[in-house]
Amino acid sequence: MTRLAYRFRDPALGQLALTHRSAGKPNNERLEFLGDALLGVVVAELLYEAHPHASEGELSRLRAQLVNGQALAVIARELELGDELKLGSGELKSGGFRRDSILADAFEALVAAVYLDAGFEGCRDVVRALFEPLVAAIPRSSKDAKTRLQELVQGKGWPLPQYELVDSHGEDHAKTFDVICEITEPTAIRAEGRGSSRRAAEQEAAETVLHRLQELQD
Image (cartoon, rainbow, N blue to C red):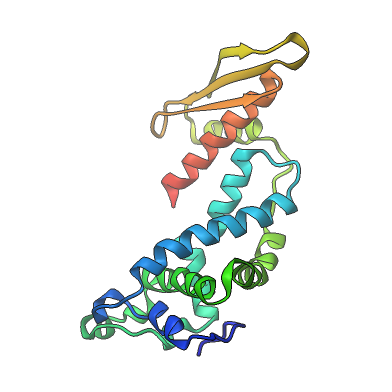
């Protein structure tokens, strides 16, 4: 079954993971929910290890590049999940086995099925094997988040980002700063960053704005 490097102890779990809701019940919808969460955890762990100096915002942006419908559909095609999907007649006639959303959902469900069959460590091993090459291949900009955000808005002709220090607290030798970064185009986005310096807080806020801009484009 499929090209996934895993053999199920309980084959029924693998079959359920590849059963779309159009085929009736039981189907893979609940497994999709669980698989999405598991993918988020394991890919976050990989990114945390691979990029020890990345901010929270940058790690979130990188994870969003790897864990989204289009990216997961690519993996599903490589695993040839479409050939194994159980679809209702309507989805089958309309080519549902080629649709990104159905393939991505099936991959998430398959991850959850491995978890239920082998436990977290077994699931983690399977996901890490699939995503380690993808994490290694992600290009990272050498420019910091504030620079990238400024270059982006300038290139589009949008107003420059505005930064506002909203709070600072703690002892002088260990202060924490809270900063707001705000843009008004292409839509109003306001994000908060926190850091041990005002600059670090601005960088985190800018990274979050960049991430939200990317989500708008996806």
